[in-house]
Image (cartoon, rainbow, N blue to C red):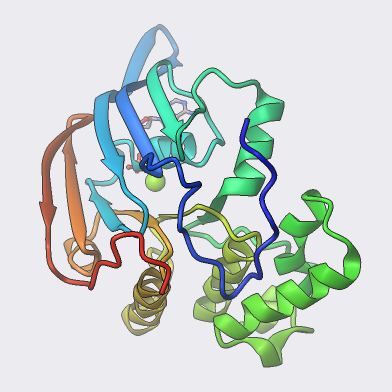
Amino acid sequence: MKPERKPRSGGAATTAGNGNGAPVIAVRNLEREYAMGGETVRALAGVTFTVDHGEYIAIMWPSGSGKSTLMNILGCLDTPTRGEYWLDGDRVSGLSERELARVRNREIGFVFQTFHLLPRATTLRNVELPLLYAGVPAAERRLRAVAALERVGLQDRQRHRPNELSGGQCQRVAVARALVTGPSLLLADEPTGNLDSRTGQDVLQLFEELNHEGHTIVLVTHDPGVAARAARCVVLHDGRIASDERTGAAKQTGGRTT
Ligand SMILES: Nc1ncnc2c1ncn2[C@@H]1O[C@H](COP(=O)(O)OP(=O)(O)O)[C@@H](O)[C@H]1O
Ligand SMILES: [Mg+2]
């Protein structure tokens, strides 16, 4: 286990790494199988790649091919059937549910296609929630949640509930919630999938800005237009990596904390 880190403020958090020079993500021969009736569905068939601090990478794959399966494993919401997952130099595959929950809370910000906000809670409350789980005192929670909401341009929507916001605003709240703990890694599973194209572009713009500020981002999508916005694009085919290319689309920070 890693030493305790200083809490970082939501909006200004960056991903400098833990100083051991390890990549943020290293997965090796990752496999995930599901038992379906009498058959075995093989959603991941031995995926190997690494992601360095400060990278912005899009993983592109058609629908139904295993994107969410991969993201759930990277996000510590699920475990692989076989293979290894190292997060920031620590081996994650093989940890217990409880340990995984802790790693998830400390290291990972997750943005889902359908936002996953608590419908009855205010924007502020939704963003504070991961800090509540982390045991952060109320006054600090409030300050950090407000800073994260400012970062995504929603400081004037603190008292609104999700049904009083547009889809794009809901996704911004979800991004603020993902940022508020100062995670090592921002994961986004089809983050523009439920947005119209203009609003989707705004969310992608926000990801680009966050990457320029030093955040490490991994996004999955079936949409080549979305993937082209990232600096590196990995294409998966039949559960394996078919190509891995720098697109040159976004400026890489290479792990700098600008
Ligand atoms: N919990 C599950 N039980 C059984 N099969 C699953 C489960 N989750 C996903 N699958 C199967 O694994 C494959 C990949 O699914 P998924 O990762 O959701 O793909 P994507 O996100 O790319 O659309 C699909 O064939 C899907 O039916
Ligand atoms: Mg999916």
